[in-house]
Image (cartoon, rainbow, N blue to C red; front, side, top):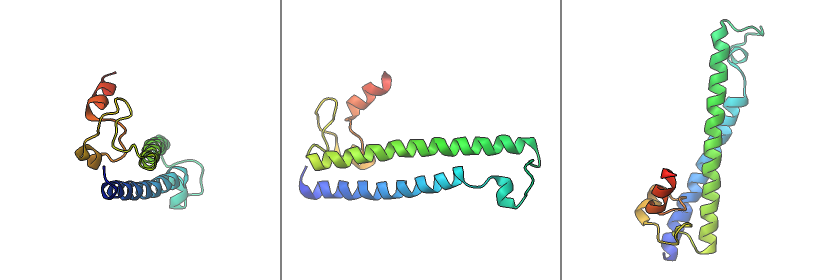
Length: 123
């Protein structure tokens, strides 16, 4: 892969990383921020209905799960940027084969070619 192609992928990864970092910050604020009763100004510690407690807990856990997923993607992006720096970006870390540019445009942080990714998903 030539330098101009690598620059395109590096710029794409940097933009994706910046967006995800902003998303993670927003998710953290949502998950760890005020509860429904605090945001509505209700000073009582008892919610209007017990189901509200379950809803609040579900929303918080769902948001924390999304944060974890985005953190994992951020780690993969950092690894892809390291592969660019090391001159091995676009090579499958499993078989050392080439990762197609079409696949890299779809998932620029992928470390696997389609064949290896398919095999890993089956196991």
